[in-house]
Length: 475
Image 1: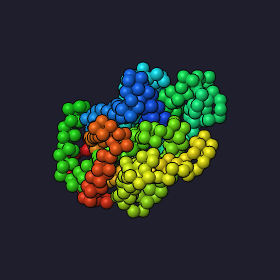
Image 2: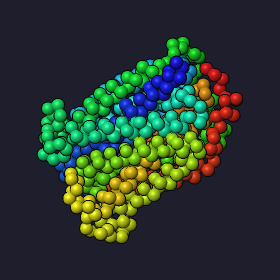
Image 3: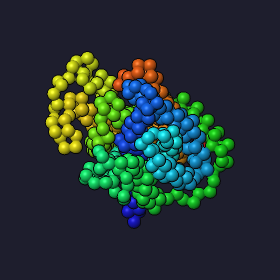
Image 4: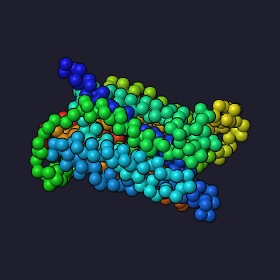
């Protein structure tokens, strides 16, 4: 019976990845993000800007929003995690952020084609994004209790892979039944489902309610099988939590392996988030891809993420997370350099063959060298990004005090968001200075390199065992 209960708990925990992934796949990267950027660019051209300037300013607006959200998460996540650990209650917070997530997602419906509601919808998206990241902190805090050190990597990888498959399924549903290709018709040549008006882009705008309903339905297994015990408040509330957090921060400075891992992940996760946030936007603004091209790009990337993450989990189980992270970072550096050096007609000044590589493909038409190259890059981003996400969670578990997991993953969220404003901010700055959406993407390469260098001082097996002997007393 205990074995069945443990298995249900693991599957219930993994349900969060499946439930929450569409916010990133459909919202951040492949449907709402590009639609937002394209709509805002058209709106700005209506104010008198030329196309290149409007594209650059649209990308700057999107990046500024990501920067502000990341800065807010960086400030509040460790405090929130410390408070949850000190009081002994995590589930009420998860419920609260789940409610905010659902409401904010639903509001994306109001991103009308004339762009008049862009500010309102940007704020709604960022509120939902913050809620999703906060909910992730509390979910990640449960990971150390799901298995042994050797099993954690596989569990983390399987959970992340399940999430990416959820993203694929959600994206396919959106493409087949809701997303408009041309003249308001879907992939099937029909009007969007549920009587939505394709000419008003209601099918594309339905991505918000779709994300909200998907999350509400598929979080049911989580709340059924990952229940929190009725534990009274442990020690002193916010004052005690801040004191414990102060001790933890002092310990971080003294722990060379953890400090360098948090700093490394701070840079490489920031760069990876930029790839996710701006991949579809880049394709729309630089290569003039339509949303159908971007959606197919998303399907390929999500499938490769699911496959790559599953493989990464197996390698993590056998070799540990550090080699997996190193391999993924090198892969992402190569991809980033390719994206920065590529325009529609040349690669670092070397002209492409002007003839199409594939002619007359269904729904896509002709594909040229840069189109095919970006599809390959998307596959690598998906596989390497999924692998690095899974292995980073596993590495954090190896640095986590067993009785303060939420605070630890709050610090992990801090490392992921402390400079989350940096990549979007640098992209916005470089894009504005150079007035070029492609060259504005170049700072991500430097961030990946910084993360790679700092990993040199991270112990492959972490320092959890030695820290557990001499740290904050158990709450």
